[in-house]
Length: 191
Image: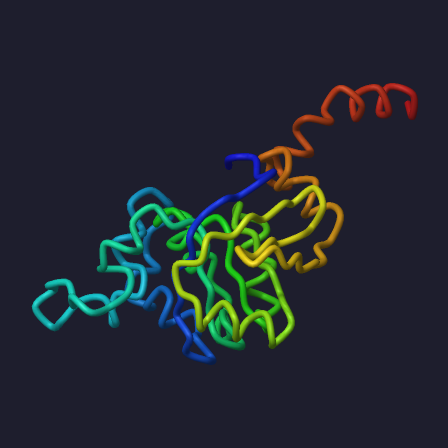
């Protein structure tokens, strides 16, 4: 995982509500155990027609989505089943943050464990973001703020251990492995 300190990016907006994990990553693509290349299946039923050709008017198929690292979604993104493949696909596509007024708990936890920053904002901020697709935002994870192009600064909360891991680009296993010397010293003293 890449460390996240500051994200400066335009937004991609998907204003629909209740975007569930099966829409983000359809179940037929859950057979893979690797993250690389999984973005090609992201929103597959919305991005491609029956012949597998890209649907031109779907936002992720448009030139404006290229290089965007922030996905803004309507209320309740990530509801449905627990599947890490959903944040894997978003991350592999290039997203580093998802912003909504409501993010399902399991999706939020899976995102945090896989390098994707889930940010919950108030409804008024979400509605501004939806009304202004492509807005250039600055996310500061150290300060836990999102700065809008208007200068408005919106605070968000994140659990401290997850924040530490994202800031340092480590997952839970990486964090534990980095503590191996201290663990060995503790075990030696305990004997």
